[in-house]
View 1 (cartoon, one colour):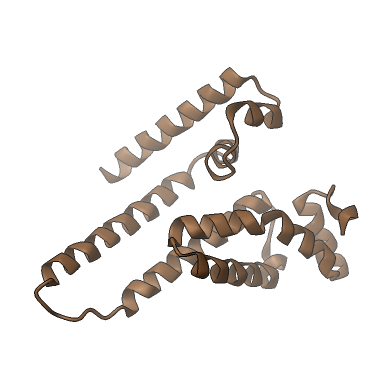
View 2: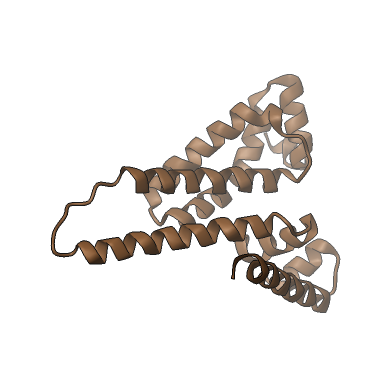
Amino acid sequence: MAKHQHLKDEELIRMYLHTQQNNYFETLYNRYVSKVYRRCLSLIKDSTKAEDFTHDIFLRVYGNLGNFREHSTFSTWLYSISYNYCMDQLRYAHRTVTVALNDDDEHQLADSSDHELIETQFQQLAQVMGTISPQETQMLRLKYEEGLDIRSIADQLALKDSAVKMRLKRTRDKIRRLYDAHYL
């Protein structure tokens, strides 16, 4: 398996699809399992469910690897599947929750509407994020998902620190403008 570590994600996918050897998929799995878990945990806030969802997501990815068309990077495709799966699970959980009627009904209704508002805002933000360039998305992911510092991002993208700072600021401002223009 170590000999596959140097291959890019897309190469691993092509090799897996061509040979059906699981070690190629295992390399992808090992490369991304902790990131998918952290993504799930940040959305779900439950470590046990995050583990289950991570497992389910990779089963889904495994079954749909032939549908990956390289229109975006594998990590972007995987992130999208992870986000959508977690949001679907949250929506499903909200639909199946039954609430006992008592004196706290007003408080429970407020909590429910707060969750709906947050879910709506997440969906709106995801739509706005879908309109920015892959380069902008990559830089945001490096900073906020992978937790890299400015220097590490600059090194990885062969840029100066100041360029990374400016691009991150411009991208955040752009997202804020797009969000405000469409949803406020």
